[in-house]
Image (tube, rainbow, N blue to C red):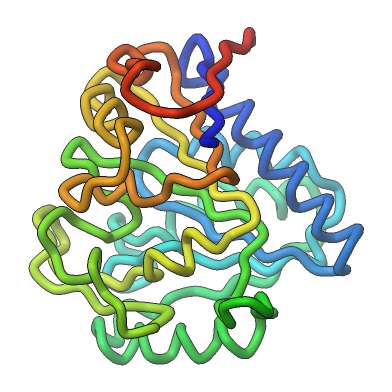
Length: 255
C-alpha cells in the first residue's frame, strides 16, 4: 500500500523527505556498511538536498547514483550532476565532512554510450536482489512532471514499456529539453528499498492525482506504485488526490 504524507508547504515537504532519506541511508549503513541512493534532478529536490547535507555526519560510505541525466556537459545548467554538486555536495564539503562517492552519468557521451557505461557501473557496485537479479538501491528519490513523467520516463515513449532487462535506457526526443537523456529503467527504480516521490506545487496536483489512481502507462509515475513507495507532497500538490480512487495510507504531518 502506497504511503502518502502531506506537508503544509514545499519547505516542510523538503525537510520531511530529507529526513526519510537520511533515515534510510543510516539503516543501510548499519546493516551493510554502504548506502546507495539514487538522486533526482529538476527544481523540486534542491531544498531537500540542502537539508540532507546537514543530517548526516559521515558520508564516506555513501555512494551517490542518479535516476536520470540529461545528455549535456556536467557543468551545464541542465545537468542533474550540477544541481547535486551545488545543493548537496558543496554543503557537505562546506561543513568539513568527507564527501560521498559520486557515480555520475556521463551524459556528454551521448545516450547509448552513457547508458551502457552506467549500467555496467551499477551492476558492478550495487548488490542485486536474489529474486530478480536487479541492483537494489537503498533510496530512489523521484519527482513527477506535469505530464506524469518520472525520471526520464515519458508518456508514450518506449522506455516506459521496456522489457529488455536493461538497467539504464537511452532516451531520444524527450518532450522537454534537452531531448537526449539517460534514465534508469522502471524495474530498477521500483526495486529500490525506499522509492520516494517528492512533489510540490499546484502545477503538479493533477498529475499526482492521476498517478495515485492506479497503474496507467499514460502516467509513468503511476507505475512506481508498491507497498514500499512513499509519496511526500505539499498541500498544493495534494489538492487533487482522491482517497476513493486509490489504495493508500494517507496522513498529514505538521512542519
